[in-house]
Length: 182
Image (cartoon, rainbow, N blue to C red; front, side, top):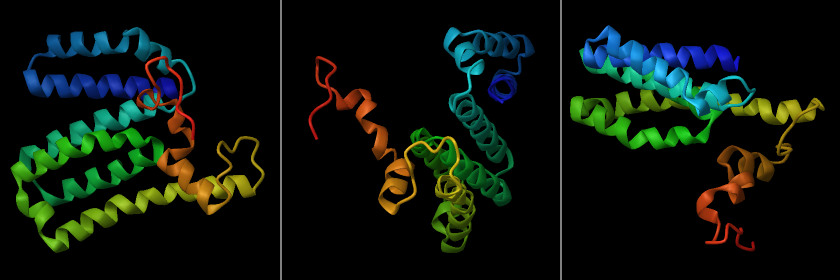
């Protein structure tokens, strides 16, 4: 699956570059550079969450570009569903939020300021987040792998919010690379 999503990311990168530059040669060159960058290659040939996350990021950017062409509301709903699915895979999707909100607000303020439309966008974003319910269900089914043991409410929220593994983050270390005491 990592290889499939890695290849999909490269195809989406080609599509984005071609739409931005109208140069097929430039799009091919850019997407091939992405494909053969060592870190991308390493993640693509290992079973991890990063290629799916890269695929979602590229797909969200492509769909945002697609929305900006005609600014049709149903395209925002598709974007919201995919953003919710992306959050179900990796919390770093939150880093896209300021840019996405800026582009949408600068293009069509009523999308996010109309209570009815904002409610629909929120619903379409929240529904895919129910994927997180699979975590405790797999733990209760005694699955071989249930990282974080999300079988209690506290451990579930610690896992979903990333609290359970924040100690590994760069900004949680001092100048010597040592985690502060809890």
